[in-house]
Amino acid sequence: MDRALKVITLELKRKKFIKDIIFSLTGLTVLSFFSYLLIKTLQEAEFSVVPMTFLQLVPYIILVICSFSLTQEFANKTDKVVFTGIFTRNEIVFSKLISFLTTSLICYVWYQLLNWIAGGVKLELLLVNLITFLIYSFTLGSFILLVSIVSSNFIVTGIVTYVLYFDLILAIFKQVLESDRSEEVKQFIVNLPFYIANTGFSIGSYTAKETIIMLMCGSLFLTLACVIINRKNM
Image 1 (cartoon, rainbow, N blue to C red):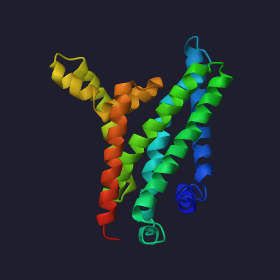
Image 2: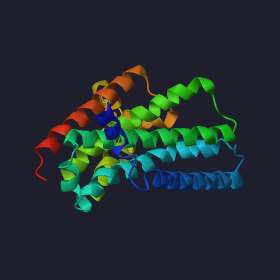
Image 3: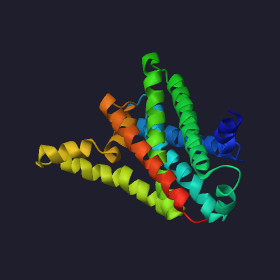
Image 4: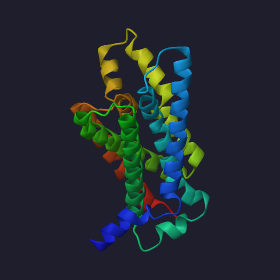
């Protein structure tokens, strides 16, 4: 039990962990306020635009923080120390994942705080939104860990994850779904974690089917990450 607790808190005890997250969230909040003011100067806008804009920006914070978490060990040449210490390689990977979930949890609390300020908190959605944040960070975080271990590079990890999960691929998927392609192709796309992740997160919930797909893919990514890190020479 004591060892498990140490693994859970290992990454959270790092210097600047919470500070960096709060700093990032503050920056996103300011950006969301500017978006609100800009929209208001052009047309009528409700203050609810602020938490809505913030929610759309959260994935980018998670992308950057998660991509940097493990690759910094390789960049700083501390990977040998980290992965050959008292904790097993699997425990280090899990500690990184726990830090991703913690980051997501902090983002969730911040988002709900903005919702409260905007007067838009819906009690019946609190748990749904929380589960969505955690599922998203688990699946995306596991994928990022996998790419980080394979590439050992922050830029490569960030680009690969961005290309497969964010704007460009979503635009391509949207074009295909609106085209006259076969239903089989469309069903294949809507069941991909690359499509589900951000489309579901942007509306604050996943369906039961999407939840199962996300958790299964996240578990697969995490398993592959653990297998590869245990075979990697340090």
